[in-house]
Length: 150
Image (cartoon, rainbow, N blue to C red; front, side, top):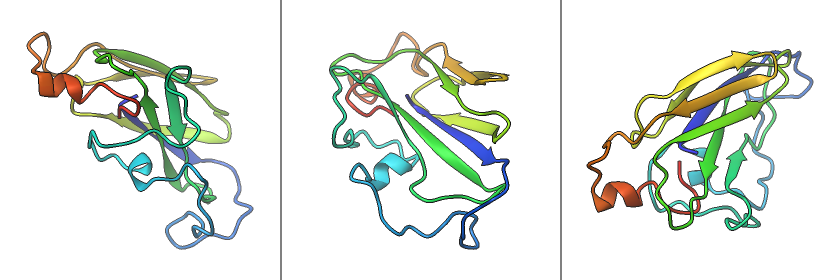
C-alpha cells in the first residue's frame, strides 16, 4: 500500500528507551531493509525475505525497537501487485485503540489525496485514483507496479 500510518503509544512505557522516544536498535529482524522503513518513493524497493507476492498481497513494517508512551511511530504498508498497476486502494488497519492513537497518515505522490475513517477497532484508509488520472505514462504506471509498492 502506498501508505504510512503514524500511531502514538498511549500506554505506560515498560522499556528503557533513548531520548528520541524509541529504544536502541539492538538487533534487526531478518526482513529489515532501510527502504522498508522509509517514506522514500523509490521503485527499487524489494519485498522482504519470506514475503510471497503470489499469496501475500499486502505487508506492513513496524519499528524494530520499543517506544515510550506518547512517542509516535510509523507503520509502513505495502502492496504487491505483481505485474499489474494499482490505480486505487482501500486498507483496514486494526489496532487496540486504547493502547494506540491514530495521529495521521501520508500516501505516495502517485495517488490522489486519501481519506480515513476511525472507529473503535482501528482505521480505514482509501484513495480513489492515481494522481495522473486516466492519462498515466508508462513510467507512472511502473511506479505503482511490483512486489513492494509504497
